[in-house]
Image 1 (cartoon, helix red, strand yellow):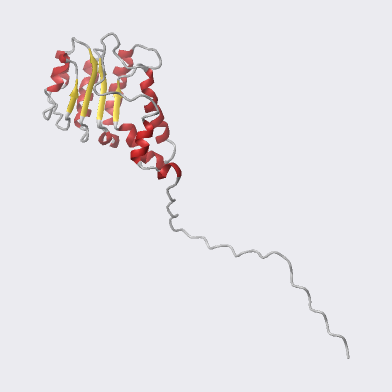
Image 2 (spheres, rainbow, N blue to C red):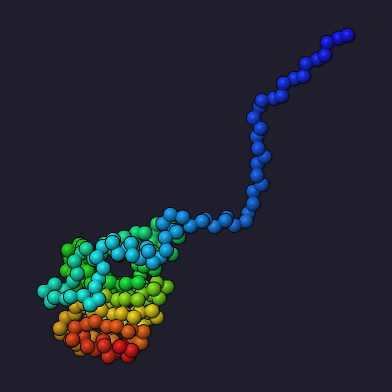
Length: 212
């Protein structure tokens, strides 16, 4: 009787898994974790440690017309975070534009009145056609006589387009600007403002805030 044949051992070659079929459907939403899981209210509190916040009212001194450079730190940090990714932009862009500040000493060391005047005009013209205009709740500003006929009207129009603006603080302005402020804010109504802080010689702006 012939001997039985031995069975061949099972192959030990690795099994290659089947390639999954490609789909054109939308990617599943990423779960919020890490920084994205922190409530916005907590992020707002954390952002206050990025740099000093502008008090309201701010103690103004005529010999120091602008705020120290340190008041730029929080704004710069929020702007950088808002440019990190889409998810962080949704959070930090709102915190960034809650306050619109044109009152800090320029870091370049140039003439503050020229730098702030040009910045006010440029930002006013940009904000008035931007969705960020609706994010602004507080405006802190220093007004100068530099090219006032160019920047005051755009600034006044921009304020009128801010539906959620409730606080306006003129930290400093030139004492001889009463007539210029009256002309610059002609036909301007700031009905959303509930609180205004300003020097007595800027009272023409107060006349435009009907709910104060």
